[in-house]
Image (cartoon, each protein chain N blue to C red):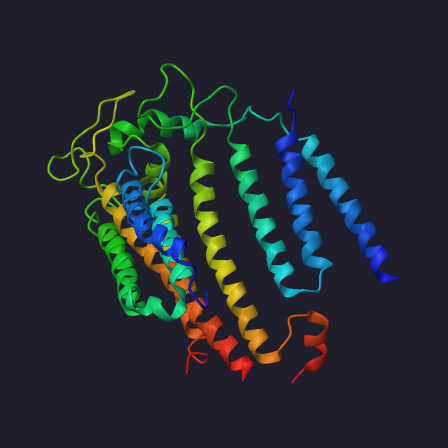
Length: 115
Length: 88
Length: 159
């Protein structure tokens, strides 16, 4: 009944992120597009490791005799989220320095100033 | 003139990716899971912890966590160095 | 973040932020039994710092949280993590030399579904605490630095 709908959702998220990266002129909107792409990739990693009718891979108070989901993509997604936080913090700091230097955050005007 | 051509090319790209996502393997049936079956079977006996994801992050694949700690530390060093001029 | 917020928000914040920090330390300490661990618990404690920063404004926050102490905590966390990795060098790098051996955090666990014992885990529990310390200090330094810099830019622009 669900089919491959989670994978199509990942493509929609990445598509919205790439659209906002290519076609927008405000620097904050470009940073939001980067965050959307990173969220789509994390969702793809977790959706790859799913088994039908399985529970979380933790042995504390788990139901008896049920299969478990694959745990390795969840460990990789944890690392990816932390690296995404570090990248977003650096991008926003550089945007603040650009605003202090040029007085505007519109990419057309920054490209024209060249001071 | 350039903007509509870019937009149509972008729509073709997204349509191609959606068709590729529909034609993937069925959702919920992983094909190869030998390594993860070994982890689920033997994590409690070898590492004495109940949470299999934490044993993978800190014990079986601890080297990736070392790299991640370094990335976070480097990001903080970069941010403090960027704002040293502003605070004067 | 430049001025503080109203009196209702200040009262509720002084009541609640202690419980948020205790919950964050609970998630860090029980990382090998329930979902959580070092990174998740560190993010929860850093969100308590962000709540304090938004409520009291950037001028008054320097008496609660100092950037030097947080930076020293972050370096201590990363050095502790690398030390625990080097201590198992008898067999290999990152070897779990404490588990199944008795002593602190060294009991074996029962195979299968069990309610969970805090004394187990080996170097996983110690590494959880080191990484939790590092993440909480790193996110705290990021939030404090960006807030102080934003206020300085705003003040210089108004002149």
